[in-house]
Length: 329
Image 1 (cartoon, rainbow, N blue to C red):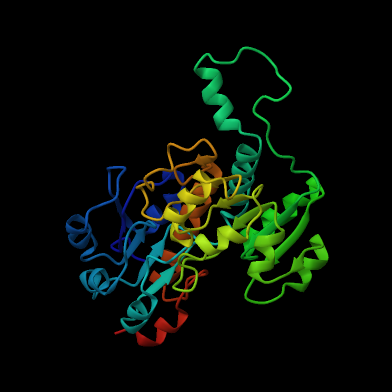
Image 2 (cartoon, rainbow, N blue to C red):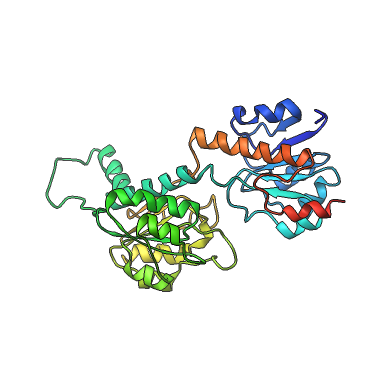
């Protein structure tokens, strides 16, 4: 492959993940650690052979056309790809790819970190202590929830959802789940039980969301769903923010319809719904699901592998639209 091939990276990622890509291509990276505006992104992709995008970059017909006729692939630095227009890319013969698998464990760990933080009021206790309010142990002070033996409801038993379930075995939890179809092997490994969404919401002590953002899952959890949950239930979201109706969530938390929530993603990210930040029974994190050094490097390496495959005339290993190969102009 000629090093005349050019690749644009829309935001800084770990440099070590780009080593192999730089050996074969001229790589230019946005030097500023912020999302590019549309006015900046459109000219930045012109004349590129490949573009490595972030989850906040909207890859639609407009951006694809700006990168054509040279561009062969937009490689998303994320497992989710709701920011990418697959039909538009396929029509234009441009590959799209994502980074599944490599961030599964990190995101599953983050779901558990939020679950513990909410159940045991870790963040609330930290604020209390830092403010100098801690005066000593008391039997009724800041009581939380047990986790051992409780019921964990997993909405979306894909890679990440299953990883969360496997971690639950150490806490002797009962596992119930929803998915587009039953996962027999998963059930055998974890003892999980396949149920409908309403049953899951009624029975679960902890509900964790692991679904992609699609028209079907937009506001999957809203006022009706909160009304089905136990008053002692905790809701965790490390998937995509718009899966929850955040206005309904604020009301459910404020009125103690549910015990609490842990969020790593937001409906209008990076904006946080008005009222959430003032509540003690919600833990708010700034989209840290895949945020470990090892995972972010692996994501960059996989995105690079996808780009190199496309530029070599092959199908990217985690291609979202392999049929684009037959539509190349």
